[in-house]
Length: 86
Ligand SMILES: [Zn+2]
Image 1: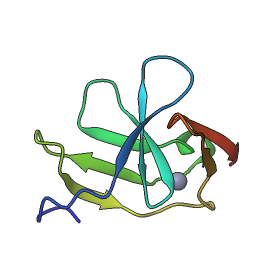
Image 2: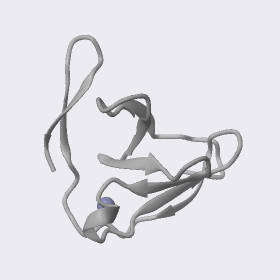
Image 3: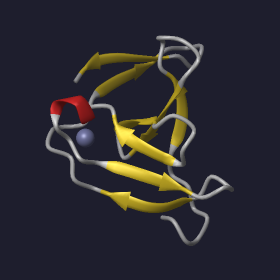
Image 4: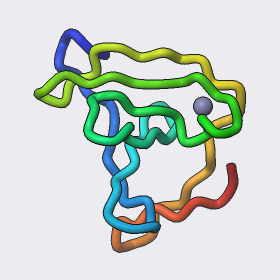
């Protein structure tokens, strides 16, 4: 992950508008305004997990500090991610 340009993440529609969520390792992150930082979707619940991207979209920093289990998503036939739990 990171330095080798090996991006394991996906960008998925959040279902709540135009913002995309990043999904990596089963966790979802949302972009902090126009910065390269993505914070865990559970930040408001106190989770400190975050990911930082470089300009090319490579993960350059990953703070794996989740305080919770990954959310569960189902992928529908048209590629839409539907959150089941979490
Ligand atoms: Zn988290």
